[in-house]
Image (cartoon, rainbow, N blue to C red):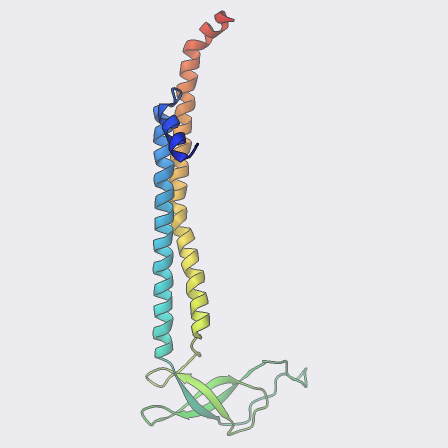
Length: 191
């Protein structure tokens, strides 16, 4: 049976094996382990951090019912029918958690009537904020940024290992040239 043990045994006993080959073998193994571990650790850390941050943001934002102060403007003078999902800026009024009346500008459906109900998102102090991301969007963002951070972090040891291998290869070629310069003339006499 020719399994990995046989191959490793033969590789150790190979008379053509040089010290540089052993060093390169350990270097490649170490670089791959470091690349996988560093990339995985950085990716998981970034994904968790992003997920926790977005969950904290969701917890700090609260919906409130607001009413349009005046009729919202039409979408555009050039178009009579607004595009699906098109929004215009309009002033709204709502009551904050502390009971104070607040006003602000939000995007609403074009042509909405004065007094129409609009859902707005506020922070703990009652200031207008963007709507929070959904759990699905948060998971997607966390996964994307975690993958990006993991890949960027893994690139560092991978590039370092590649540069070390290039240096080892140059060193091997220089040693080979030196050895060939010494033995090359004798080789020609044997033929």
